[in-house]
Image (cartoon, rainbow, N blue to C red; front, top):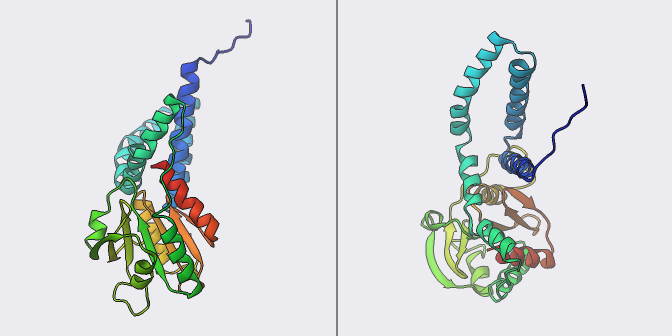
Length: 260
């Protein structure tokens, strides 16, 4: 019998790439939320199910696995509802839409000015030198109106002195988070959801956990200034970027601005 092989078509390549993309996005979401072990367990279960039902063709055990899979889909939706919501949010975000549009148009979108970025950078540097704790959340596509309502509405222009005064140790708003939306300081003293990720380093405090929590539930970028060390960090897309320099902070803020 002559040797034959299947020729991959463009549709097959696209199919493989889409599956790989979905697995990669799922892996990132599970890793950022601390559920990577559960994700690994699900993959192992799927491999065993395929081997039992397709390769070994064990009808009794295969039928049991089939029933578990049909019920397991609902269980996975309930168990990972936050991760699924975050995944759908990232797919429907303005960044994803702009990326597709730029791909077809073949041109890059020019980023905006830095007039609202530099006051934030300078304020963070000043607070870092004085070891003044701060937590600044920058809204992107996902609206943070509910978060803003947990604090005091300010609605002011972004100003270095105002930011430093809000986070001054004797200020009544210094313990909460500041929300920046549409190039304005929207609110301060806000309460953020705290991440329960067990992989967060022990030396990182409540501000870091809150920053990671808001970056897991929304597409916002959170800047943290440590009160203990004065270190500047960013939580974005469920990941930490620790011990940033002024140049790295400015670059990350500029890059996320250009993604919008």
